Image 1 (cartoon, rainbow, N blue to C red):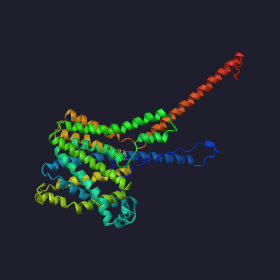
Image 2: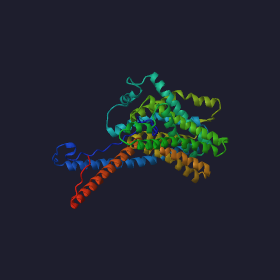
Image 3: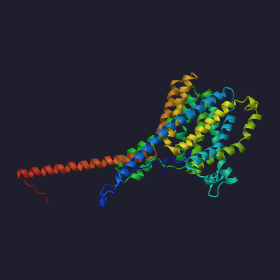
Image 4: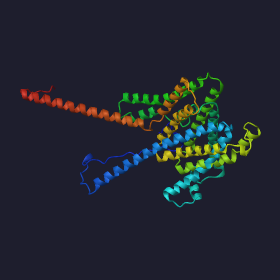
Length: 440
């Protein structure tokens, strides 16, 4: 069973290719065959192309890490600048979410440019709408499938912006990293995922000794549980920094709420929609943008007439900040969803994590923020818990195979030593003229 605790995006995780070497001649009793001319060259060229593609993918992933981290840091810092002259978080969230409509047109442009297909945008849109069912998208499915995810998306962004009004960008970005632990807990509760250690024991109970299985099970269980405990500990320490009162406590609660709704969005996406390709995700995000524009536009109007958020005149709005913020947010979402297809998903998660030290550097250098020891410790604990949950999906199987290989090699070496020692004893007996008679 797959694990969902390591995911940060609603796309299926990238499965790395396993390179299998050809069997040697005569192996497994097969007859040896003469090498065909040019076979060595083809194998060398294939290996070179594979290594080159892997190196390019890793380099592209490192560049993606930098871009993801920079876009998220830029988004968070622009929000803080916008709040200096325009304090309307829901309007900012609504305005930025509307830009999701551009996701599918951007995807279609890139798809046509890279593949050269001559499908019309309508044809491609209908093809990607199979995410909603074999019959495509209807009005009922549009509302039924899009409404809960759009609401969760809006809540995540809105709570994140409210938290930025109370806390520094570093604190909020660190607390948002707790969504990884919440994904693990919700996957265990909602998706009924078994612990990885249980899966390891079931899979390898016949191939490894019991003590190794139990030890590795304890290690894996501790890895996930300790990560969740570290996230909760970091949250409590962050709230304790100012004595569980005032804006700090409210800001921590808002940031944790944003991380929780983000985790619920990811788990429900996996539960109801399954694994989707890039075109289907682009279609879905654009559909959420349309839903946000049509159905959620009434909320900013209600907040305006009830004077909860004072917008002012259109000419007085900071359009430069608003367009910059919406553009950076769109770029971040594009990089996250495209990155898991073009490179390794773990690199995208690392890019999100690196936004914490990035925001800390900006806060210290530009805003001259002084962090207390408790806040620094809480931030480090949350980041360490995030890193624990970034271990590859099949790392337990790799470790078990490695331990099994070591055990096999040790047994072979022990057998060879016994054979050599018995041979030496026999040779000494023959040299001394003695014969060993086996007992009946």
